[in-house]
Length: 95
Image (cartoon, rainbow, N blue to C red; front, side, top):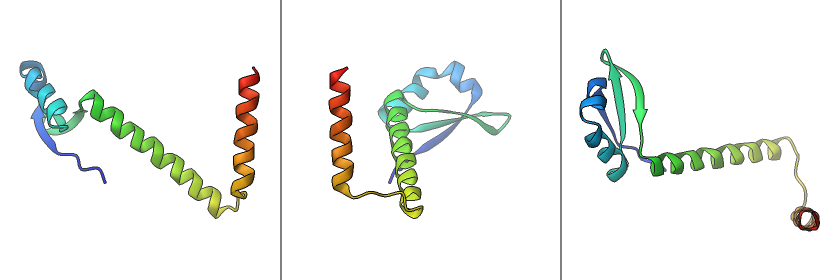
């Protein structure tokens, strides 16, 4: 599973120590929680780490939808699915 290390920094550090925060996010794949008045306000992540987390969330959403389809009986034999995919690919190539 995904393990995200976190550090907590006051909002003033975002302005005064941006390069340190950026390094923590990118090099250590660490989430930095920015606080305002002692309370969590914003989370900073390195862009590559953000994309990885986003891709995982999208995959989880697809898997959850598939699980609901199975529970609701919206399933078809695998061969039917493969034939449907081939048909759609041929239609797309013909465009």
